[in-house]
Amino acid sequence: MAQYLLLSFNQKVPATANGRSLETIVQNASQGFGTVKEFKVSNELAKFTSTDQLMSVADELTKIDTIAFGLVTRAARSIQDLAKKITSDHNDGFADVCPQETFGQVDIPQLHVEVDDENDEEQLKFDEALEKWKWNETIFSSNRLIDEMHKNLQSEVSRMEEDLRTSGTAFTEAQTRLNNLRRRNEGSLLVRSLDPIGSKMQLVQSLEDYKASKAVKSPIYVDTANLTTVLVVVRSANGQQFEKGYELAESYIVPNSCQKLEQDGDFICYAVTLLRANVDDYKTAAKEKGWHVRDFKYSATMREDMIKEAKDAVDHYLNECKKYKEILENTFSHLSVVWMHIRALRVFVESTLLYGIPPNFKAYLIKSNTKGMQRIHKNLEQVFGDDMGGDDDDGADVDSEYHPYVSFNFNLLGLI
Image 1 (cartoon, rainbow, N blue to C red):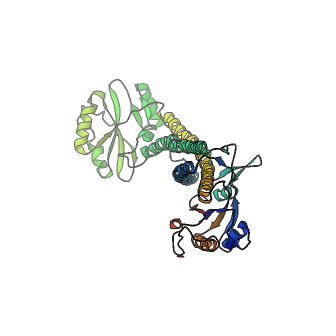
Image 2: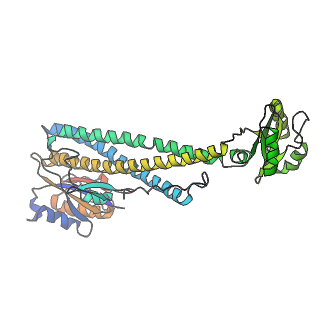
């Protein structure tokens, strides 16, 4: 787990430095405990009119810093969740809903931050982008009134928060549509859709159709002005009972019209033909026997319609998945860059408040771990003193300490 210290020091080093430069002090304090890089924040980053203005902005920056980093983490988590889903799609495919088709694959999303480097765009991991960070004038102009800069950053965070909130809506709807299609084909004959079974039947609407069906020897679905076919599901144990007594009353059923269509572990699906006017009465009588007349409506094009519906659902899902992947990647990248600019502006404000006007500070980024951070602070405070009441206990939480220099610490758990 990558952890970082972001420290800022007064460039006027104390007498206890014994003539060493600021960079040497920081490097020596971190030796064996972390790697040091300068975090280039200009002493002329922003304009301000008073320390009161800086203090007010400092409070607001703390809030949007927390919000922005939380959004970065949320975007990263969404990317990781989507990566798992896409990997599952790669492994399982869509043959369960559309066995006749072959579909393309959506690329696995990446946790990359896009960084401009001398007119070239690089795709870097979060920690790499952080260590190479510099203020991007194209995104946020510097050397402006600090209130204006703060509001621009705040506005960008709010916009990205809204984008992140709404970005998954279309994908979720497409996923729900596909899942509903899958659920229709799951479960026993009592609950799953009977369309795949019924679609294999041959439509009979006349005597000529009936004669033709004899040659094909496939189950028939009768649909005339006076006759219709219904699908009845009974427990497997009651199959013989149904086959002997399915007619219930002579006025209901066409004699010898019972057809066994399919059987699973627990149930059997039959088709029976009866007078159209007696369908409701037959449903009532069948229910008393524990037989289930399922809702089913035959269509001559239902097989083609089912295939088209499944293909459309998968195509729509994959299209929305691809768009959602691109949105998440762009959102994560941009939010990460915005957060780094917020943190830089915080360094400027906090350093100016602590060291005085005009700004005269220098910032460093140190990659370390929890214990290493504690040792680095201890070494630095031997040089800079502990006038702010720092805690020297090696077991102390770095977040709870006070130091005679500007200090932020954060970890990148889940971001790389």
